[in-house]
Length: 305
Image (cartoon, rainbow, N blue to C red):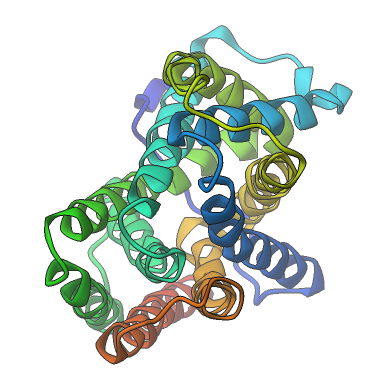
């Protein structure tokens, strides 16, 4: 992997249709990430966004530290790749998401996050140097249209909401790269050693901003529990599940966890936080997931051909 450079990806090891284990990994990561937007919004009621990000990645790192296999031997030459993964999948986007949720609802954040599957497919097309098929091209176009529809109501709600949407879109683009970078690393080392080191990098990078937010945070049991759920579930276990799946079936197919993430984030935001969602945004969320579905269908057909 390293001889091809840091910014690279590979195909999944399985060309078969999803089995029970694959569906289990996908559903677990999708459900856990879908609920993360609610936990984040609740934690932001008491914690500074810098503390939310720092404690999230710290709890995730400590969780994976409990597994001895996380510290398995790792080639020094692959540290730049795993450091880049820590930046693109954790430190940078996980800093942007709480900042964005100060400006937009958790439901909107979850809807825009649904575009990650389209971003992953687009980046995979470039890194694998393989032109997309006709249906995949349609899927990418449909997904982009959906993201635009989701974003329009927030763009019209003022400067603060617009900044929040831009932050989320940038985070989604970074996810597009990160999902692809994770594949060859997982295939070489397994998910635990890769993510433990990536989270280590992320803890170091997010610590300064977290310390800045210490004095602006209010400590109590409920927000800490929300951050524990966010760190243990949404940052440690869900990332392990998604990384294992990506190494097996490829980045594009694994990223369709957004099929589960997006509707769950919307439902939880409406039920538990009383958030209102514009009709155009709902249509856009469905359109985005449809675009991701078309993109993943093309990947499945071309790999099974």
